[in-house]
Image (cartoon, rainbow over the protein chains, first blue to last red):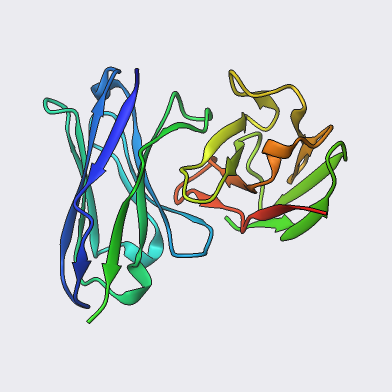
Length: 119
Length: 106
């Protein structure tokens, strides 16, 4: 059974940093691209970042480029999102998500981890 | 790529046929997926590649593409279908979602 388990969400002050993790199991992690998607309270879904199966390709939403870094450790089956220079606009539930292929949509999602940026 | 989803909300009754539209600001081929989200839950994939039904999703859900316009249709609305629906483009990075359509009980 495919499982994605996010962790690391916290209350952090504006300008602070945070690293999210997503522990994957039930599939060959190193064979699949992964993504982070967030949802601000009461708002819609927003794709944040993606990474290729090998980690060689990384992609970002324009508003997080230069502040967020996506990475993965295929030996540990874990996806990461390092977030720097956080602002209130980054407050959201962050989900990690997996697709079966390039045009397959995200058929597996974690339960999400809440990041709150506030003083 | 911007996705304009309409309507942003609708009220419907059980048994109604419901159609939600998503217009892409540029061509995305068939790289469109549809999701259902209920409060406090992660999104659930319904349709991918514009018109392919995800395994396990009821056949009352269908997707269609015409150029840069995509539609999600629920042929006969059921009580468990009251939720928010999102389209997504996977044609190019950064990927993007539509603004969502909340389907409420009339």
